[in-house]
Image 1 (tube, rainbow, N blue to C red):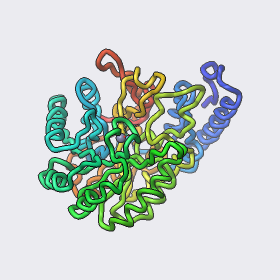
Image 2 (image 1 turned 45 degrees about the vertical axis):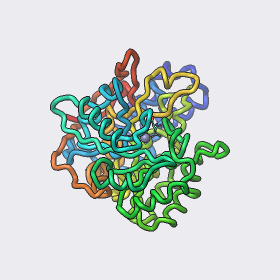
Image 3 (image 1 turned 135 degrees about the vertical axis):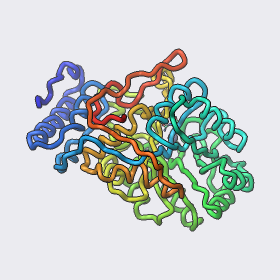
Image 4 (image 1 turned 180 degrees about the horizontal axis):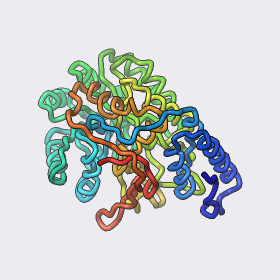
Length: 411
Ligand code: NCD
Ligand code: ZN
């Protein structure tokens, strides 16, 4: 490998950036000279150079010597957190999710949000109508909790199978969360009922206090909201969604079996440098925002550990490019087009392909009390290019790692 061969692409970056990248490439070079499978570092190198994602993976994979197989067959996975949107966007993004995942937890933050059975049933029908022929896919619907959620109604809709879970958005925490819960104590009676009937509570775990540094909002949520909630409600199933910090990994890991977490593909790949690499990078912006490198590494250890508390949830959250590249760009990373392939690449790099099925296909259903899927799918080791912009509604959405080489391919 020739480190640093793309110097022209980065010539107008600062000297510090260039020095940092040169150090990374030197690591890669040493790493490759050792005969290690270099697939992921090559991808990262390309991404760092031409796309500015700001990745630093070489030190981790340099420790691993495991050779990946050429194919990987696993039970069909599920996506335990996805934004499928509605209308033209739904039609455009759904096939990407449905070609990989048998089931997906469809997030309810539409405008207006999915707060009741009628809205959920109608949304489910729109999802099924948008599904291309030949794809088998089941959306799992979620209720958007508000200060006014009625516990009896929610319990009835869960018993009827309309809802698989309910989602707690702290008001104003993220996209379409204005009608979310203003103070968790206001819905204690709803959470008590959910705990009693075993209805999973899915949590967007960030405080919204503007005085709290945005990079601390997950850790502060755990301290101020989640830990007290768990102490108040001893029997409950909670998923801390899209965790981004070592603090969250440690908290979930040391809690009882009723607390689990989803981990996105993008938080396994980027750290917060990706937001600012050579300039402002709106397509690396999501909530919770990516954190430090030490956090990314903790997430990778958790996801690849085989621990039943951690499972796949992409949080694929498409927004039109024009809504991201503007004065106040939306939060959300659209990872669906290559989600499974990116996760597989992370597991390959970590020498943990033998635990990929556990994370992607087994831990989620086990937590939700559902059977794993019977079907299987096969990923092949094959170089391909992650899809570039996808046209939608007169504009486009940009996939995560668009145009970057990937080394695992589905189908
Ligand atoms: C999500 C969205 O766009 O709906 N955005 C995001 O950055 N993840 C909402 C969410 O899950 O926070
Ligand atoms: Zn989400």
